Length: 116
Picture (cartoon, rainbow, N blue to C red):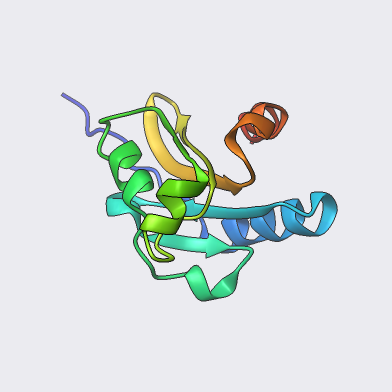
């Protein structure tokens, strides 16, 4: 039996995507990998932090998660209001991305991100 492919998202690419969304659309964005570790973000101070919703997405518990204003406030800065979803490549979960906008406003952004 052949070895299963391992995929790695280059951090530089993830950061360029976050910066592009923020600069072009004014939208905050994160990219998280295994265990919800944020590896790229439009708000650089978030890099290295853990995101509970992204951790659930990366563990395969959920495909997407919305964080409302009340949940964001209760997290004491660990999460922001927004929407997070998993990005798959070749049948494997590559990363989780999150947009810091009200969940009801994110549908067009999530469609764009799936082209990535």
